[in-house]
Image (tube, rainbow, N blue to C red; front, side, top):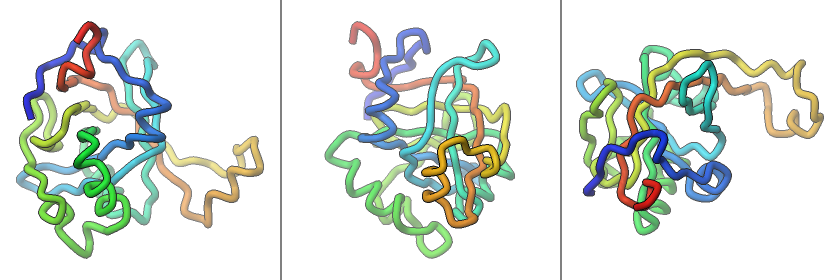
Amino acid sequence: MQRHQIPLSDLVLRPFHTFDKRWFLLTAGTLDGGYNPMTISWGAVGTVWNRPFALVLVRPTRHTFGFMERGQDFTLSMFPDALRKPIHGICGVKSGRDMDKVAACGLSPIPSTEILAPAFDEAELVLECRQIYRADLDPKLFMDPAIHDLYDQDHHRFWFGEVVAAHGTRDWRAGG
């Protein structure tokens, strides 16, 4: 897919819609050392510590967790609607421990421009993120009791990634 570098100040991203309705494919690892993609629908983007960031959450039981722990970076990829459901139907349900999800989805991994984690040629938007902070969610600190219902002792670890590059189609850039 034809993508262009997007200055972060020109990136048009509707965060609530993007995470909740479109989802991202989080990919950690390296092209030559192994990697794994997984669907995420929980996350955030914004500014913290005077840097643009993306926040992602991964449960310790997910195959991607080990890649996040060993790595320094990750990508977030968004796909056109025609590809979104088939990709997320595999990457959001199946484990990379049991199958080659990339091959099953027909994805073409490509090098990122600024980091080691791969991107995908079919993506219409790629955010390249360098890890800058991680921590475990502490259930003792949940202020809304309903949050406990979302867990069975498998609490997420979250990562802040500084967004160091964005590449996308005109739809993701202010002024097109």
